[in-house]
Image: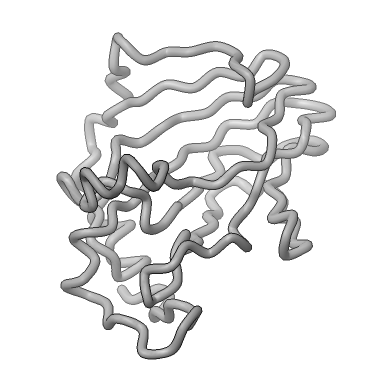
Length: 178
């Protein structure tokens, strides 16, 4: 039961290939979903603490090139509260073959499993960008892939997290808080 934003459906671009589409949307029960995600991650997500849910669909051959989930340095200097502190990917179906998320710098492959999620922090606790979060979506070989991204903003997170005291100290958080 989704209410799709009418202005934002885009099909194929330089990053997406072969029958990939995405749309920003606001589910009719978004407060309930965001509340659950806050309890799961311990991060502020509701309201302006995150971007709208972005639903992705990939058919056979659909993939996305490796990239970072951040707003450019010039942009975040202007709007510190808007750059993407953390990324949360929700898998909405099992993919018959392919469609995994890969973190190329870390050598990690995440298989899309319905109902699962991946959370990563795009910055270290001291505010320096974590270049190990370079990631992409592998081609779907058989079936289709449905996923959703929730990008979590930086400014609101200081209420819940301590600033890092060591350079490149990873952010730590309790999993499944509630």
